[in-house]
Structure formats: C-alpha cells, structure tokens
Image (cartoon, rainbow, N blue to C red; front, side, top):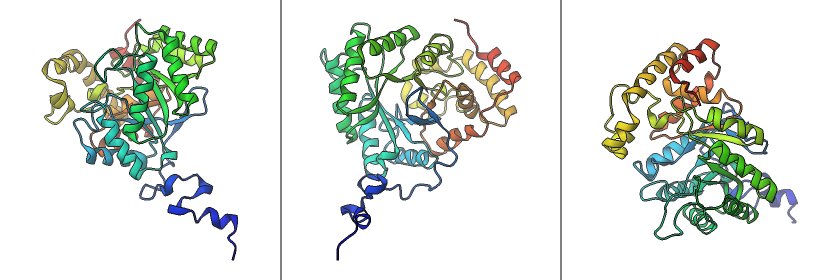
Amino acid sequence: MTTSGHDAAHSLPGGALQATGIAAGIDGAGFAPGRYDTMQYRRCGRSGLMLPVISLGGWETYGGYRGAEVAEACLRAAFDLGITHFDFANNYGTPPGNSEIVCGEIIRRDFPRDELIISSKAGYRMWPGPYGEWLSKKYIIASAEQSLRRMQLDYFDIFYLHRPDPHTPLEESLGAIDQLVRQGKALYGGVSSFSGAHFADSVRIVREGRLAPVTIHQPYYNLLRRTIEWDLLPQTERAGTGVIAFCPLASGLLTSKYLGGIPADSRAALRWGEEATSQRVNDRDLEVVRGLNEIAQARGQSLAQMALAWILRLPTVTSALIGASRPEQVVENVGALKNLEFAPEELAAIDALTKARP
C-alpha cells in the first residue's frame, strides 16, 4: 500500500512534523498551551521581527551565581508566559561564556528552537592577546563562532556589537555583522550601549555600504538613568530601529529588594563587593526609590512592575530585558502587563523624582 504525501509528512524519523515546521520533534510539549494568549508582542522598529515586551537575559545569573537548575526553572517559567526572547553574550557567566553553555544545553534539549529569539553579543575581553576584545572583524567573527558552539546552535536570531570601540572603524565592525548575516549565522544585527551620535553614524554607514541594517539597539535605561530619552530615542525612531532596554530594574534597585538593606542572597552581596555595592546602592538613589515605591503602591503594583510599565509606556521601546534568579520574579515582572497606563499626574510625580536634564 502506498503512503500519501500527507501521511508521509507525519511519519518522519523522530516524529518531526515537517508540515508545521516543528524542529527535531520538539513541539513544546510540557509548556503551557496558552503561552501566547496574554503576552504582548511589538514589532522591532520597521523590521518583520516581533519581540515580547518582556524578554529574559542571562547576564550575571545563569551559569554565574545561579546554576543550571535555576536557569532551567526561570527559562521554563518565562516561556510558559509567552517570553520567547532569551538574551546572552559571550562574556556572561562565571567563567565568561558559562551562561551560554548552561542555557544552550537547556534550550537544545527542551525548547522548540523555531519559537525562540536567541541573541548574543561580542565586545568585551574573552581571551589574551590583541584579538580577544573590542570590535575588530577578527574578534567579532571568532566570538560569534565560539558562542554558536557553546550554545550548540546553527544561528543566532540577533547578534550585537556589545559596546562602542574607540579605535576600530565602524565600517569594519558593521561589516563583520553583515558577514554573519550573509552567512546565515545571524538573522538580524544590533548594537548595544551606543550613544545617539554613534548610532546615527552606524545607520549612515550601513545604508551607504548596503550592509545588514541595525535592526535593534540595546541601551541601558531605567527610571534612575534616563539619558537615552534625549540622546538616543529620537535617533532610533527616525531610523526605524527597535529598542530593548537592559537593566530596566537597575540591577534590582528598582524592586523592593534593597529598601530594607542588602539581602544576603542578593547579587549585591554575592557578586558586587563592598565598593561596587556602595556605588550602586547609594542614599540618593534609595531616597528616589522609596518615593517611586509609594507611587507604585498607589497604582496597585509592585515597584518592579511599575518600573517595567513605565519603560513600556514608550511606543518606541520594543521590549524590556529582565534578569531573574527565581521563577517567581519572572511571574511578578510579567504581571506589569496588567497595567501599562499612566495618568498624567502619575507621570508628573515620577518626573519630579527622576527626570534629569541633558
């Protein structure tokens, strides 16, 4: 008896469902079936890429001061809530690169790759000698290859220039991203921590050179550090580039965590050291945070939820990139989506506490 084309498509080795594009038979079994019902997604600038308004990163946490068990619990909790974007870099974890190793194994084993946006970056020091950091083509291409091997991936959805390089011509660095895109090792290119002027130069260079566009910018942005509002966001909006804010909770300062002191199990206690902690958790910022907490309570939100909602008030912001050391933190942060609206008087009160001038 012959097998019809329809039947053949559903009898491939390993149970791979060719007709639905489900890769390697991993169909998301075990994850929440309604995971896309409540998450919001925004278009990344003028590209076709859609990102969840809350994304999850592995910076100091996974493969750093938290191990594989915590990483898996947080990744699964995030995906169950519709978070499809997981963000890494070559230097994340302890030792550098360990976050990609730990999370890459979890993603390869358990997650449906075609439902995910996975990003990585290159720019900070990774190995000895003159080729182990910054943004030369030599370093970027080597870093991307290493990151792909660590994560056991064929390609990244987004690959970033992690920081500006004062010495390497932008043409060279952006040309390296273009090469990765043309080779199929990255689908989209991005930059991180570029000033408005540096970003504008990048846009001009890729247009003149017909290189892969700068699809996304990842800047530092939160209620305590608002510089990008006047320096960068007018440039990204003009260029049609998406924006994903990193450290939207100021490394935990914009949560209730530090209102009563430094918890023993916090990043401040475990990772930063006394001097760095005193710089990040200072009296001036804590006074502002206490005032913001009062506004959040009046809104019926936690401070973290209000801080994320405040960032997402801007239509030019595609996503806010959170970190989490417990699944419960992921759940709380996604709860911000229940109230993204601000009354004029609330914004005025927040501005009175936080708004600086250029």
